[in-house]
Length: 369
Image (cartoon, rainbow, N blue to C red; front, top):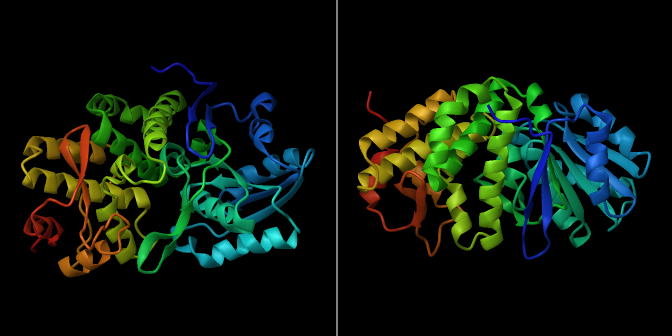
């Protein structure tokens, strides 16, 4: 059993600035309230809290009221869902900033999951050519992945996350207590990103997950906090080497090229991001096996750990050419060639375009009835 975290953290080092990730499980106490933890990182006197209509009833009032004792605070509540990660929602954030007459001294606070965090970060990157923002991720997926590293943006009808910017937050506050209100499906979606780190970086962590996933799914906050810190450390180490994804950072997209095809084809929000990534990781593992890098038993192990987390391991039926066309919009395409993250072994990933196109077609082919 992991010891209670209470308060833990690490630092992300980037070219623009360093910032802390604070991991805690004591939101309910006055000493460690969200407001008290983020206030030292707010520049200026203006604050816009961006959240959605699911998270707002849970945490918005307490955060806004306490911050209002020191700052001018306004809120922007967006509809919840991946299908709203678009220009319309970004304009709502801009409208709120303009209506409040906020300027370059404003700090935006993203209170929510990955969709809220990505949009808030993109609004911060683009409003008046760049203002400060803070991440308060309230889902496991956003705590272990999207809130760290400064990738912000919105979706386009023809491709996920195609419009955006690299813009680092001032700090990230990951409060394990928020996971108590997370639906089981969303928790599993977050576990997909946790499992991803194990598959690409650390087979020992995969073994740890196989032993601890039941406790994580039962909301053991100490165990969850340990996993969040491990994943954040993995990502912080990679971001420090490659902030703008010109090299090693691309490995963090294991399963995502396949997964983004699923999300885009099925309609944003119908498959959760983590669910699509889970099925995409299986496809990437199967291609790795066809390349002679993984054994059948290792692919079976990947499927077992995903199944243990209540994640899908079979993608929806998508015509091969449709999938290839969608892959052609992926940000990792270079000089017209699809590049994929595959596994040389469990715990070791590689970015490559050196694969037989027929093997990819075989993996993408819908199963015959």
